[in-house]
Image 1 (cartoon, rainbow, N blue to C red):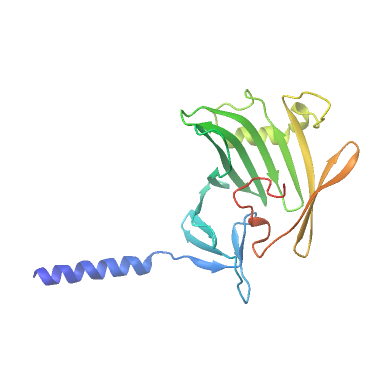
Image 2 (image 1 turned 90 degrees about the vertical axis):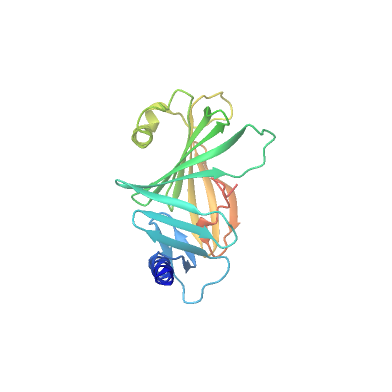
Length: 220
C-alpha cells in the first residue's frame, strides 16, 4: 500500500510539473505590446518568456533576474529595483512601471531602508518619443491611487511644469525627446525652445530597445 501512495504522489508531481507553463525563447520582448518577438533564427542575446494567467515573467539571456508583470484592470504593472553605483548604502532607486495603450510609464524614486521615498520622476515612453517630468515632493500622495494620480499629472503636465532651463532653479520641469531608429541605430534628440539637439546615438543589439540593462533612460 505504501508503494502505491508513493507512486500516486510521484504521478501527481510529474503531472503538475508538466502542466505548469514553461519559459519560451524569443529574440526579444516588445514591452509596449507585452508580447515576444519571434525570429526564424534566434541569436544571443535573447529573452525567455513565461505566461501564467494574468502574470508574465520575462528574463534576458544575460541576466538572472526575472521581471514579473501583473495585469491590473486596464494596464500591466511591474516593480523594478534599479541597479546603479552609489555611495549610499541606506537607499536604492525603484521604478514602478505601468504599461497601457502602447505606452510605458515609469514612476522612479529613491527609497530609503526605513521606507521613506523621495526624488520623484516620471518617464513616458512611446516608440517615437519620451517625456520626462521632474516632480516635487508634494506632487504624489502615497495614500491615493498611484496610477490615477500619474495619469492626471501626465494629461495636464503643461499646466504644472515648465520646460527645463539650465538658467533657472526649477522644482518642477519637463523635458521632451524624440527617438529615431535606423536599422539597429537608435538616435535621441532633445527638443526645446532652441530646436532639437542630438544627445545620443547608440547601436542596439538583438534585444533592441528592451536592452536597457536596468537603466531608465538607457541611451545616456
